[in-house]
Length: 492
Image 1 (cartoon, rainbow, N blue to C red):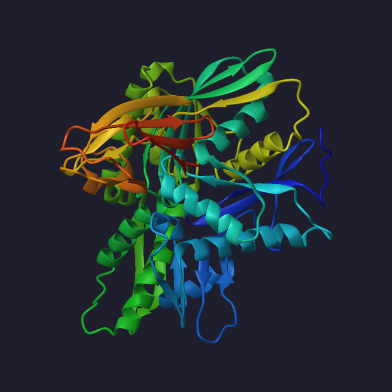
Image 2 (cartoon, rainbow, N blue to C red):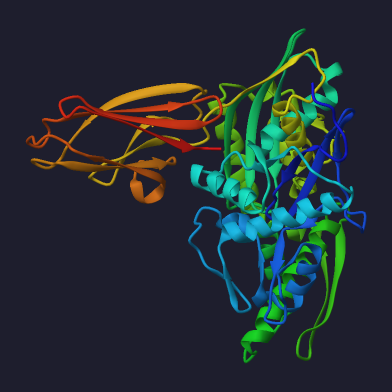
């Protein structure tokens, strides 16, 4: 076993939509780093204008974003499905991968500043379970661009379950765990079977689901619209700059109000000069806030039903709920969970804001063989999305369905749709829809050198094989042309 120390630790980074955190493994368990202001998390915000030599990152960037939102980016995690997007800040252009790498580097440097001679052995970075292969790959690229030695990528609910399992290992036997992960930008719901026996701790994913466009940012937007309406703000005739500043200030006011309404029945929203000569001085009731985001609760309720059904469980089978993410603190979430799976099942002994970073550092310690346990840790995963091949008629032929336990393998035979075809591009897709246009393209395999045959007379065998580590191997075989081509797509 490798020795743990502050100078050469293994790290876990929770790269969040709105806030990020970093933890290291110690011999006594995970420890989350603090910044100089004794905060455990950093805003996932980047700000840059023409006066600066380099971008500002974190909480200071968030403050600048309120007064100059045009030169700030918040919620870049929602852009990780397209690395070719252009984000213009000041006189510079950035990609989502570059912005994410700046956030990761900033979080890492705070940990680095705490210890002279800091030289970590490696880092694990988290992603939502519902991220596609492209989003996961782009996240890994961002970590490498930040100069981090990436030991691995782990899904956030798996990290949270690890933190729970390690925290409660001595008190647990076998149970069904639901991880309810509602962060700033994404909603992940994952059901595990936790097994604790004499030789092994096992986390087996039974089902997963979610929405990568549902989170605290959406709640803030709806609440900001409610504040704007109740305050009777007059937006007519305002300059574009003033409108942008007002919208940013409204979002900040909504965020503050949302946090207060998590433990109070009402709150005052007071913002002088939100627009020239216009002020906000209103009261928001918790019931008003909950009403304006009710349709998101309907979405979450439906996702919970679907995931429980996919796991072949009844609601009463859920023994424990682990809440993850700052938005899970909203009181109505507890009402939803109580109605759905029963009361008094929420585990409250781990911090929903920090448990993902803690779990990531536990996984890093596991990968680097630093956990001094007699027990083995086993993580059994399942596919979050269906995987298949695009067809000429615009549909997707699914080879691996969603929620298939990994490792798994499936082969299907296709054929050409044109006469005398000598080469072929096989497009690979990930997603739940039957139609190409609604799914995410994750790669293309070019197959040259086919023998000429009439349409429909050339058999092409395609095999998808997914490993325990969620790596997808795609094999294309055409026997008459003596073709056997293998390519790999990383899902995590």
